[in-house]
Length: 417
Figure 1 (cartoon, rainbow, N blue to C red):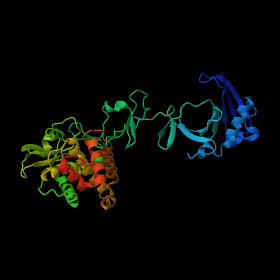
Figure 2 (figure 1 turned 120 degrees about the vertical axis):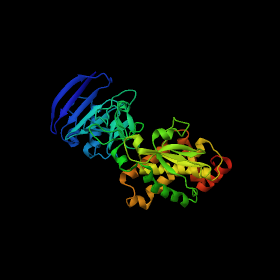
Figure 3 (figure 1 turned 135 degrees about the vertical axis):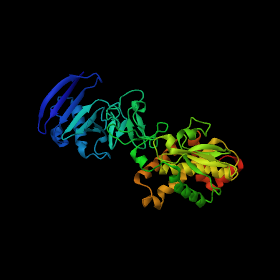
Figure 4 (figure 1 turned 30 degrees about the vertical axis):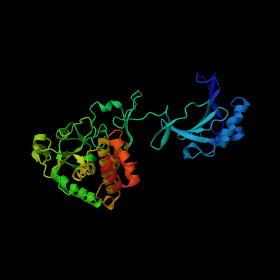
């Protein structure tokens, strides 16, 4: 099968090349114009291409229907234009399929027109504001700036932060923030090693990280006020303590979950709490004795080094465990108790991010973004306990309100439906 490629100046044809194509047994013609679509409209545009008359008329009709150049295409249609593809610095404009033919325009200082056979690929990928054919799109890694390799593993994508990276960076030692989960781009500095279970923080998360127990107390007092505003006061003061990762996991039985906080109940023990900002663990902790002063809750432990907005979320979550225990709730399933606790943390985030305090500078722009990321993680979590639990609890609260949901939970140990 033959394929003709013809290059047109605005006035005349300058060159023709014949080559073979294996893709289809239909005749394929490529037509290149060097100025605008207007240069191809005179005299039916293609009368000298030597194609069958019906094909030339079809091509002429397509060209005549184009009311805008590809450079001014806004994605809303126009003439035969239907979609675009941005590849290798070029913008492709694809016309509707007419009699099995497709017109493609490219704008990079000139316009390329070509007629092809049936286009099999109808799916598009997106990068920024530019769409691509999936076969044309080759994403670049945000970490190493190389093209992400095509393999069964695909790429690592953080949809919230819109960071795309090679799968290899998950295990090649590339630093990754343990709070926002963004990788450190090559050639940049500033990721901080907390010297605690290989945890690292990016500079933005580090800016508001709470590193020692006493710095956390004002935020703890504010979240007490949040609960009081919901008529759910935690009447007995429960100590809030920041601890290292190892100490935190020593207090839980399920060590497979990603734990950043725990409400310690029915236990008296001596633990190590973080009281000084230091890179050496033995120099930043001191012993603290947990006691059952209220008979039930010994304390709330939060992982040190979390940004302030995430620390607040964890306090609001763990305080719900304390409130239910101190209010006489019977033991419930993990899904129910963790689900309603996630709802309380989520409610606190929504309150903070939508309040006047958020707008007047209480939270930085990055903290607001990180708070939205935390909400997003809660909402889409695939975890059967925390994710499914949150969605069921949230649905109940949205339908029946918080007060009636809690009353039903007290009676039945489950959510109302």
